[in-house]
Length: 238
Image 1 (cartoon, helix red, strand yellow):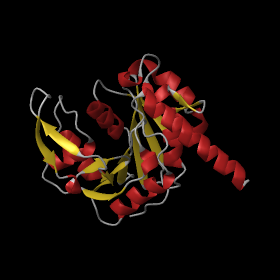
Image 2: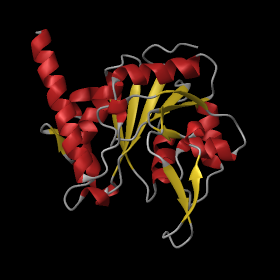
Image 3: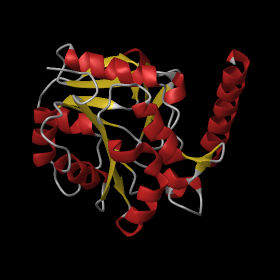
């Protein structure tokens, strides 16, 4: 099986509103350094040099606008209407991917600054024999369990076995299809969670601090700072 350009496709669900980021355009269409978050995310995937196709699940009433936004990527990017849940959006995008692609990545548009090297690492892990792979980081904060009211601590959780999950998550195509076929209409878990529900293993690889998720206004400020530092570094290299 080839993992060069053509052997791997990526799905980017971008149909959500992202309301925690505040009022305005959908989260994926907000900007970091005057570049839309969605463009950053797609560019990170394609810059890995290992992705033959990216399918973006857009808001159903905004497909044409998203196509225009991603026109620079040509035929490498295909835009489809998303669903009313993240799981449905991924499933719809998966249906649009030709069967020639045997490795499928699922990437959050909100993790806009994910380094291409992490994309490559996920692909290599799947190609190396893991049917489901997720990038993770150790949990740095102390974690407390609380009661149902949320007002009292019931336990301090052992964080040595905890990991914060990032994207892109990588899958053997056949497994991802099977996981989504078994999903329910109320599923809100990530794609790896759907695989776990089948009782099948999910491998982990080291994540990257710059693959953080832009969810709140503070995250957007952090992303702007990271992007500025990248621009400065690129200018110094020139």
